Amino acid sequence: MKTVFLTDRGRVRKINEDNAGVFLNEAGIVLALVADGMGGHLAGDVASEMAVKQLQALWEQENSISTPEQAEEWLKENVLKVNKHLYRHALENPECQGMGTTLVAAVCTEAFATIGHIGDSRCYLLNSSGFKQITEDHSLVNELVRSGQITKEAAEQHPRKNVLLRALGTEDHVELEVSSLSLEESETLLLCSDGLSNKVSDEDIAAILKRDQPLEEKAETLISHANENGGEDNITIVIAEQTAASEKGEQTC
Image 1 (tube, helix red, strand yellow):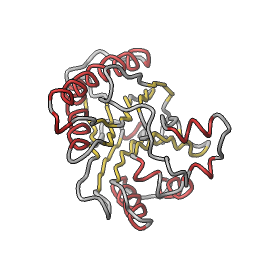
Image 2 (cartoon, one colour; image 1 turned 90 degrees about the vertical axis):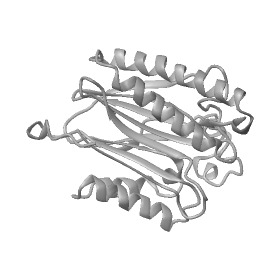
Image 3 (cartoon, one colour; image 1 turned 120 degrees about the vertical axis):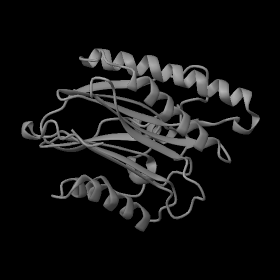
């Protein structure tokens, strides 16, 4: 598997409250993470950094995952641990009161990918059938769309577009939504914060991912497009591409 991650402050924000990473466990399996922090001066940065670093530490000790069911259980169990730690930290540190973070995580093996998410950071899949979003935003406007109260087009301009219904670290308990899918040769996963998905259309994202370019160039182009379209938010992405059999062993992170 080939992977790359890239984060950018954008053109407006003074700090970058996003964090991301791609990590290998003892068995060489990939865990990709994107976290978009929130909650006042520096607190969002604290929340997203803590979430990524703690999950990295837990993942690097793991060596027993071989099935989607095991991957789903690992994500649920360990994200819950991290949530409790973030929630306690906010209670004990007044400057971090109200902090939280979105999270989208992908456990990627040669046969399958298991996706877990909280909030509105997303995971997309590109394969021979097309390009599609495989996570559902835990946001107010998405619930309004799902219930038929507003259209998807109206949601793009809704004044409460950024209101989340779930976030990591804001409550003592949070529910992680998980799903697994088979991962075939040449299929690509994209994990991103809303700094990308709010500024670059699905059609443009798909067109860039389909280019015959190194992953690093695709990532840089996606970031550039988001900035060219305003760059009002931090922008973070992970691209994970399943390699051909002849390329196994050439994994990059």
